[in-house]
Figure: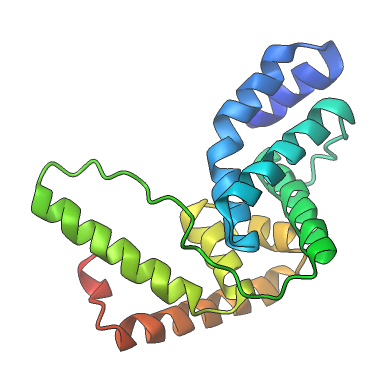
Length: 186
């Protein structure tokens, strides 16, 4: 059992408020970035993440234990985001412009600059992909979920998620090559 599941169980069963605080602290940033990839607006993503944690705190849904706690939490967040998009009747286009860049720990200013340029190129290429491609790439490579966990979040079979991931990587590679990106040296 991962830490999130034990923290949530402590909160849900024993009323230990620190369990919910630990969950928010540990999963907030990743959930916000994931939701930003779906809705295309960091402010809205923050609100949807807050709605996800409010749902955990008020309704206290039961985790059936079919997947990791992170997968279960991201699935709840994804469902809330899909509901939001349905209500807003927005299209599939998602802008990652408003997602904040991760700060670099690089010592050299030149290296830092080059890394930032690579991130900008990568985000530009990601924006050109279909929504499903962005989602599967984000879940597997940025959030570190397994293909099985990503399939659960996206409500797809493992096989269709593997196929989607393959096609997404192929399309991303094509986008990066068209922008002159040297992905071999990352």
